Amino acid sequence: MKNLQFKNIIRQYGILFGLTGLIIVFSLLSKQFFTISNMLIVMRQTSIVAFLGVGMTFVILGAGIDLSVGSVLAFSGAVAAGVIQKEGVFLGILAGLALGVILGAFSGLVIAKLKIPAFIVTLAMMAMARGGTLVYTEGRPITGLPSSFAFLGRGYIGNIPFPIILTLIIFILAYIILKLTRFGRYVYATGGNINAARASGIKVDNIIISNFTISGFLSGLTGIVLASRLNSAQPTAGMGYELDAIAAVVLGGTNLFGGEGELWGTLVGAFIMGILNNGLNMLNVSSFYQQVVKGIVILIAVTVAQSGKK
Image: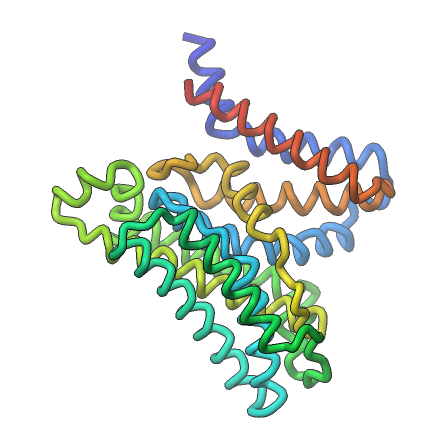
């Protein structure tokens, strides 16, 4: 009985233990790590992965996968920046968000209606969106953005960076959708058993399309925030971000086969990725070794989580 209770605790709260352990280790190794200023930096950097992670959580809970988020991020950010230069900040933001929604919805439509695996469709979208970014930007950064655009990525409300506040708003809204609405229950049902969900009257095609649309919207938002933070839209932006987003979701305990997971776990998983990046940088660890360390941490976390489930 005690062994079973211990496994349940590990399954439910193991990620929090892991996060606490990382903070303690880096705090002991670097005096500058666990300070208010550095924690705010970590949270602002984490916001990028958190935005993508929330969208990826919807997709994975519905038994899908989205490999295109990094490329959609780049394309949306580039289009937003281009429109901002010509038409102003408001229309530029709308254009970037609209593009993310369109690309996400298109992927979901192809997956749902043509029954093509999400892995293949989003892999194709990853290539198309990245190519579209390079064509649109002609392979050059888009710079010279107005100072009013900087608030999204670099602004503050009081002493708190705006991206952190935006992360909390998105998390709360997504949590309400997943936990307190019929749509959220249908997302879990679709991922748990798509045939049973369809037999019970759930329009699973609409759920799949909606999940990818949400992911596309948040990818577009991420691209805009990143362009604001860098004060430019880079054609290479977002490369590899899809792996960080998936890692955050998996670290958070969401089942890669769908139907099981919690949104708060994704937020903690994103924070773990941010802690790792920041802590290793402060210790002057080579970027080559950082990739190795992150891979080991992800593997250990998933192994522990699976052990707890068994």
